[in-house]
Length: 408
Ligand code: GLC
Image (tube, rainbow, N blue to C red; front, side):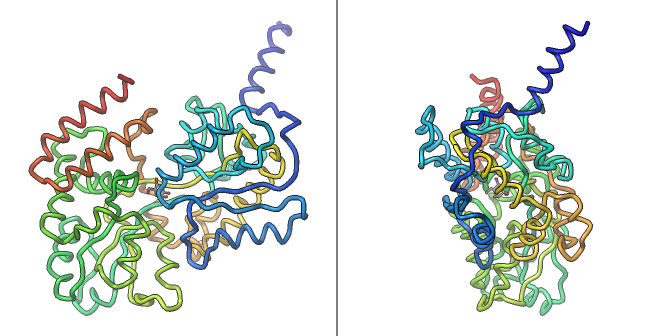
């Protein structure tokens, strides 16, 4: 009996606790890669500085910024990881990488990440869904540590709505009504969001679809079609400006911040940016939870397979994801924490963000999300320009996705 048990226990332990390769578990200088630091006052850069001031001279962190779009960010990390496959100790290796929750698992499955020990990072204290998205499909391996949680918010021009005696919209119909009637009187675009052909488009479409009772798992359902049509109609009617077809998070934020739009859908980081000194809308904006479910977003921190200084990499991840530094990034950058305890601090997590996060949904639950999203992006970007093609295009998309999911 014991003979059987021992190997089994060892095997189970091996599944949950990564086996450490001592030659890679060194301390020394590392690089940390995140998307371009678009936070108010470059708070990610400052956090890295804080580490560098406290760490020894041997363990300094060099910060590398990727493009803002999550798709481009991933493409660059993938290319670098592939180039370095099998290469030991390359100075080109990105030791610690910020990875989007929606592609953490497939990125890890491609062999680019080092498995981590849950207990070492105290992931039990973190939001369950965020932790789940950072694990392997069977839940046995932790690939990354949840760093920040994202949920969509509806930003609005408080000065304009107050002058009109209006409360912010509580439904899609009210949004459309205010965006198409009030905005033009103030020479403003009605509504901006992220409609470029990239992941943000799927996020914005999923939310419009949920607002109409559909979901991306049933693309050919009448409610889903109604949601997509509502967006396409918004463009056709003009209350969503044509330019927004090229907007990502930052471009929509620039439009809203420079006083061009009445409403904007964006993530929490936009709040502190709108209040920076010299911001044209400082003090003139408000925000509420989206009146419909938001897509759940967020970023995790991972250790690269190619990293030689993995001990330092893990220490740096512990530093960044500590409750103290999540609090700091909540206060200064508006980031939604992943630590559950911080949700009990109302000054840190404002009610609209808490509400939005608690109601947030997975975009399209699927082990193949990864492949499905690029098919969706292409079709949806096209369809937004052609409200008449919504029915047919979504029927087609539903078929294409069924095939993609089966790997055909
Ligand atoms: C934010 C979210 C991420 C999402 C991306 C889409 O960065 O955190 O999950 O995929 O926006 O643009």
